[in-house]
Length: 331
Image (cartoon, rainbow, N blue to C red; front, side, top):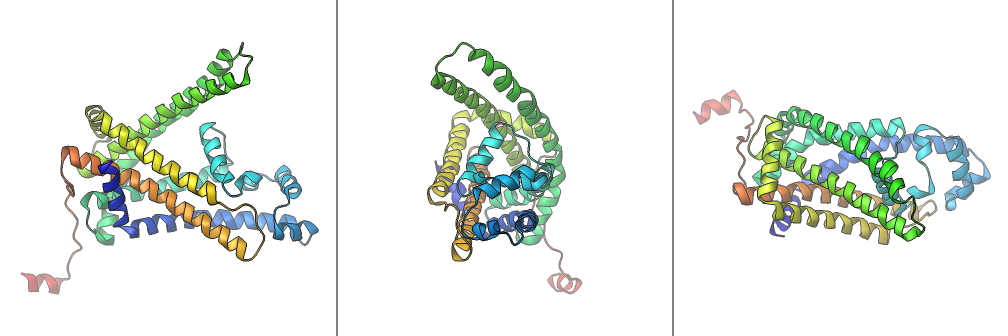
């Protein structure tokens, strides 16, 4: 629990990072939103359905739009309204549902941006003091290529989980074990148990890869395979603390999702209610990003408390070069 509180403190003391990742998220999402707006406006035109859509949600029109739409437009469904969007994304992730190529490309670009800023973010949280823009981007650039190599390993592992383990559990094993089950509730709990197995495998891999990044940043490791091995040794030696912290971080994430689900507005009309819905949605995005950053900061805090000390980072903080005049005066 102390590592979680320490992680929350570190994130809250660096609000510029949270603001930056929110702007990054907005910047990547805005083109998709504008493209969707253009599709909707083109389909509605000046019809009566447009007037209905301006005052609420026309489910008949949404069904008609979804039947003829392709690509990005096919994602417009009633499930994207309010808290339904959270559950829709969760269901899509767990069930390994394929998204349109434009969404996959946008997600790939977003993950690449996260991969770039991850080194700077973790370096800032590990040092517990401002690194300024030059220090942040120097760390981001230096660790980006290391994390790219780590991403190759992650892609192989997650590819196995979603490409082989998921189909085996839900397309092969689940039909076999429920073949003679006559009670729907029993079949449901069997499926939940398989979700738990798959989720545990995902969480274990995520935990190892997170600590591989932590050890790479804090100890300035260059070999990502060695970082993975070091992460496994750390997780094994401090299994109780690492797993407990991961569960606490995950509960924090669930609290954020539950709060949004409780207050998320449904379909509204144009005007003030539309902007209120947008504002609440952005607050949820900020809270989700905050929870993600707390994951990293708390894991760094736990590692430093067990194998180093607070603020320890092996890599020296880069200094912005002084002008020739300033160097002459200082010497």
